[in-house]
Image (tube, rainbow, N blue to C red):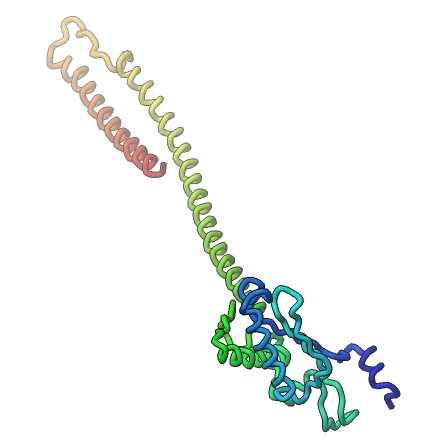
Length: 270
């Protein structure tokens, strides 16, 4: 048994003693109380309030104030949401969720709650009254029905974050690709340096052999011995030296071609 229902609501966490909704048209720049539009907005909000209780039979209004003492006219509506015919507990009890559900506003998710859907509906009612006075409702930051400006901006930020994350992912892939190419290039350069060292060593051997060919006794044609015939000198000295020279030249040409090929490979790697 509930001894004091007021205290139960006051000390409980599920419901509030009352709820308040504030409605305002425009801002201090376009509907200032000191300008002509201020009086027009006052008239619109007054008409909106006169139909509020009829539109919301399950929201008991106990206080409504139209403030004209600040820069922009705005309307405070205080009410107690209630429902009747409850099968559990009290027949008539305080419940915002059930009161709005009875009026046709059933929440779908954490963005489209009963309260958000109801507020959007009341804004539409206010917009229709504004239209009769020649004022159009400019929905700043909204594009979907029942979606608040805050939720819209949140979704836009999420889209921007997703876009930036995608761009970051693409740039990261490019950086990794460049790093891979750089490592491959560095490996080729190291390999080319090794080949160059080998070529330098081979060239040193070539220079040494050239010096030997120029000054070595094996590559000089000896003076003919006395009483040696020309035929004997040719067969014993000249022809063997010519054969040796041909073999050496052939070896040098082959070695030179091999060095040229390796040098071209190194140039292509750098």
